[in-house]
Image (cartoon, rainbow, N blue to C red; front, side):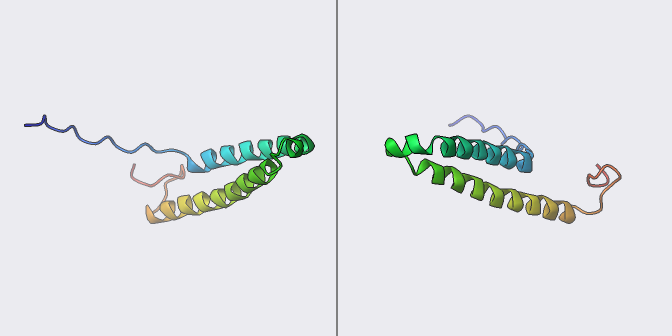
Length: 90
């Protein structure tokens, strides 16, 4: 007989907007570096890296918009807010 299973841990809450924004900023840095080094990258056959970084920035911007809308919808669904901006009664 297998040992009893422990209960699942509660999911961790993270600030999705900050995480996605940080990731997008890193892609933007990669885009600048790739753009500065584009001639060298082309010579090495890696000219697409500029476009990969540009796609990362573009998708990151879409992600930021998505998680901001998601956060707003969650806050709306949680009911009225107290003075601190959080759900009332907590």
